[in-house]
Image (cartoon, rainbow, N blue to C red; front, side, top):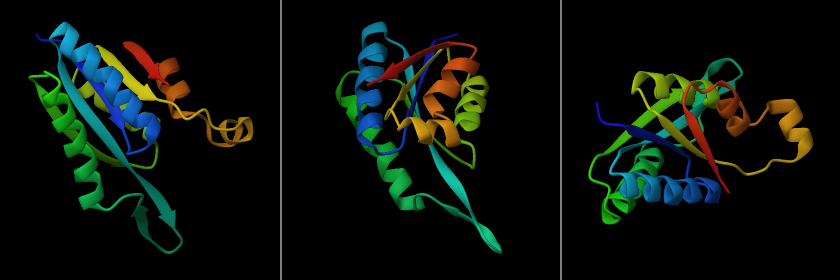
Length: 137
C-alpha cells in the first residue's frame, strides 16, 4: 500500500505554510498527498448550523492547494471536504479513514486564553493522532 500524507488546510497563512511543507515531503518521498479542508459548522440559534466558508470558497482553497502540489511534482493528489463542528476530531477521523501515515497541520499560535477556552487544533491532533504529525510554522 502506498503511503499517504494528510495536509489540513483552511486558507490561512498558517495553512499555506503547511501546504508548502507537505508538498516538499510528499514530492521528496514520492508519497500521495490528500488535502483536507474542514468547513467548520457553527451553531446558529434556532437555525441549522452555518458553515465557516461557502462551498465555492472551500472548493477554491482545495483546488489551489492541489494545483500547487501538482506543479511541484506530487503525482497523487486528492481533495477532501468535511463539515464538522470539531475540526480536530474531523482531522483525526479523516486520517484513520484514508489510512494516513503522516499528518501536516499549520499553527497560528493563538493567545494563551484562546487555547485555554477553545483548545488548539494542532495540539489536539498531535496528542491524539496514531501517526506522525508535523506542525508547520
